Length: 95
Image: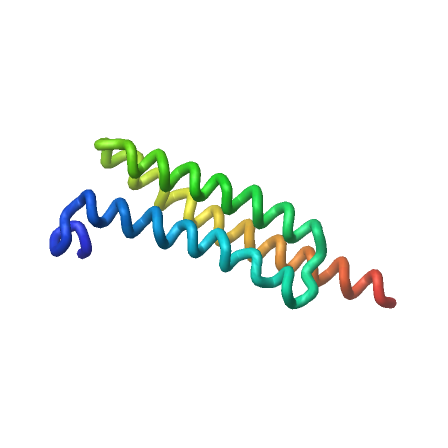
């Protein structure tokens, strides 16, 4: 909806800004005790998300927007997988 209301360039700026916030927010579990495994994984996934967002910012191709959308689904899957793996490692290391 945003491209129809605010325009494509504004939408791309919003995507980049929200991508930065998303990458930073994904590191929040480190404050709650997540291990370095989660931290490294979240940092790598977040950096790749930012790479896609910057590529979209510089591009005129609709395919780049779809590529970022596709990666966002994979990103969430892998991030939650890392959280689960980190939790299981914690459970088995304490018993």
